[in-house]
Image 1 (cartoon, rainbow, N blue to C red):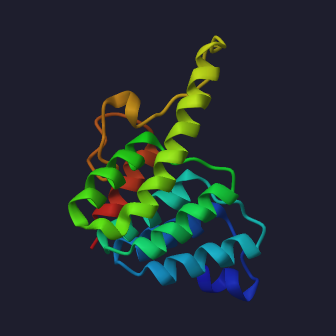
Image 2 (cartoon, rainbow, N blue to C red; image 1 turned 135 degrees about the vertical axis):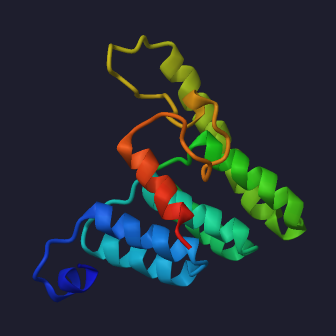
Image 3 (tube, rainbow, N blue to C red; image 1 turned 60 degrees about the vertical axis):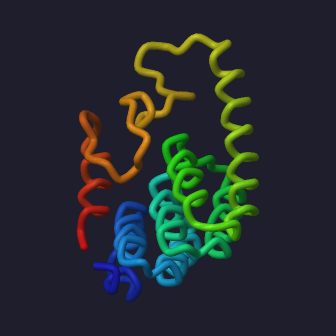
Length: 167
């Protein structure tokens, strides 16, 4: 399907690109995943949190702080913020690794402060029924590991878990 998209017979879509990024990230192919991200953006598809989370986790698991900095900068430029569970995962795992993760951890702390400030301003505004703005779907279930089996949640959360489980 990705080949047909590249040849122009299929319209590019975010879900397929995210799936391919998840696949490459799970296999530890960070460069391939980043190339797919660039291709996706070339087709004017905007990444979302589901695009960046596997890349972030792959950089940490692969002990690649330089790649993590590049991914975090792409995340920041896209105007997105990582979920708290992803930040916690990176902080926990990177601290086990070595001091080469010092700079990425500083960037994450800055992003974390941005999230806290955003949450504080959102908490002053009452949510309408069905509104999830300012909430964190993973954290709301008490889950702190982005790769653990979802207890409840959407089909996309289960799908994300399955993608991460393949290997």
